[in-house]
Image 1 (tube, rainbow, N blue to C red):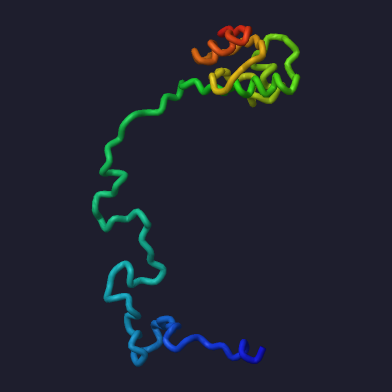
Image 2 (cartoon, rainbow, N blue to C red; image 1 turned 180 degrees about the vertical axis):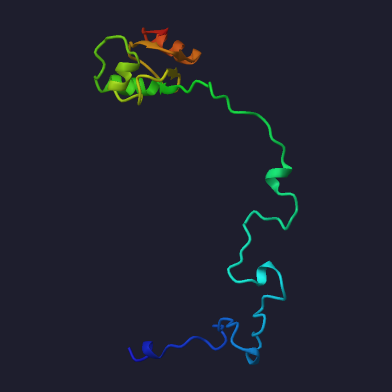
Length: 152
């Protein structure tokens, strides 16, 4: 135990921090390593990370393109594997599934927004759907399982 209390850092392995602004005699007084005049010699001065020294900034050098279509329809996506999971849990009663029933099953968050069925996964249960949109692969898999899908 006596040895642990006497441990010291190896000589030269730890460097003292640079103490600036402590008088001319310290070698780092006066301008305190900040150079002469200018923005960075002032107290509290920083430059923004994106400032490029007066060069034309990147966001102005790069041309604008495209636009955001405010009328874009944002579908709620339901995959085939989600429908199969619900069928495996015996939550389907045989009625036609629409946005309201899909919301009750927890597959979509809103019954007001349009629903699109996509073909990810496998389906081996007969399901009848009435949705706003569906992919060709989803239609193919639903009809192969003996179900039907109708666009509303």
